[in-house]
Length: 278
Image (tube, rainbow, N blue to C red; front, side):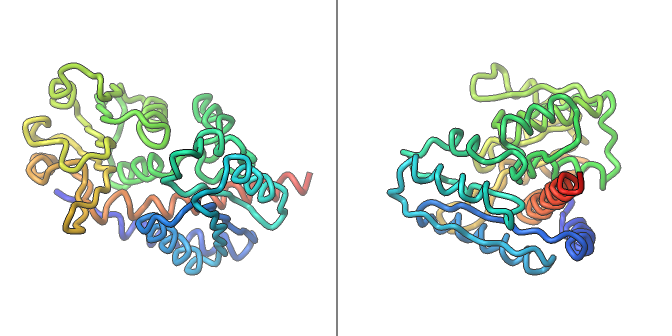
């Protein structure tokens, strides 16, 4: 059965909208270059921001900007008292070190939850901001009453954005997690043995029907655009058909991810307001 994120997104949107009336916030998105797909995602964030009452400003830097110049732009946003959260839109030009740029962001304004400080808090099980796609996956599972306790989970993809933080979050919920990657041997054996398979590999229809067991749960975090412009997930439809629950693509995890980013804005806004009161 395919499950969708639209209703969850709308519920989150209403809650964030109410919180935004009491907590002034502003999101800054740093975009380098003119990637069209990237701009489409930014436009979606701007639209969501308008709907919930959180202004979104875009700082567009030339594709030839140097590392030092890009980091200087981030530091200026760090010092701007009107900016609550900072997001670095990817992809970045090859000459820009994305990790170094991310670590330049003040961790108190790290809306993506990717600064070492916030990743450390996640590992220590301290409350705070977490990467939005793993948050969306956890929200989808809870909404469908999936108890992770004792479940065997196989995550395909170990990125800092999705796979690695999700493994930490699921382990905290008492799941037994196997984190797979390009060097994993007998990947099919790992995925077939799993109660829950999470696909976050970034390859269209990578997970096929032979790689999953009947009645498993599949969370597809992949969004891939083929030559015709169609969106495909990391999971083949025949594999999704074998699952008890499978998140749809499009319309599944991606629908919730944007809302989770703005939920992080609320967390940052609350933290900053609390610091000011002290």
